[in-house]
Amino acid sequence: MSLYNKLFARIYDPFMAAAERKKLGSWRRRLISPLQGQVLEVGAGTGVNFPFYRPGVEVLAVDPSKEMLAFAKKKKAALLSKVSIELLPYGIGDPKLDEHIKPASLDAVVATLVLCTIPDPQEAFKRFHTWLKPSGKLLILEHIHAQNPLRRGLEKAINPLWKVLAEGCHLTRDTDLFLREAGFEAVSESYFHLGVRWYAAELIPKSKN
Image (tube, rainbow, N blue to C red; front, side):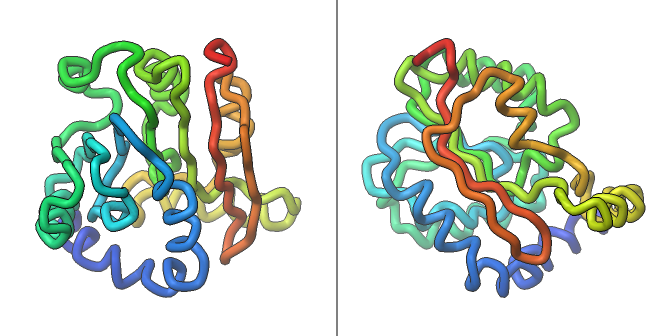
């Protein structure tokens, strides 16, 4: 798997390039560029979001894939220290992450193209609640399960193979619904199609309204 992980990390940016140019890049900018303060980026991957952070933001960027983080380090270096970014090789469920994040300490959590792969999203949502300040927000950009019955059926059919090829990515998660069930309220949200159905949103924990 190590060899495949290295290959996946190497082809990720080229594979996503067309989608980033067409739609995803503009959504990343829209969600991330207003952020200030202390930010946790979950599943930072190859560091695609890094250029969108404004100077002065302090970002803790985590990803369990050291192969992905090797590319993220290069993007961080290209910023010439305009943004403070600390990279750590942790998944969201890693207990070591709790040593780096105090409760109610984050101004924002950024999760782009990652909630489809997290093994236990509900546990991740609980941690987001714990870590966010009362004024904190959760920024989401994620592909989600189709509404059309035929598309839903197709996504269910190919999901087992897709998870293997795409390092645990699920095509069948209704992440927008999961977030509401987990106690998050959308301040703004949008749905769009780009090959599959996408969800972009700024959310706050209801209990911290």
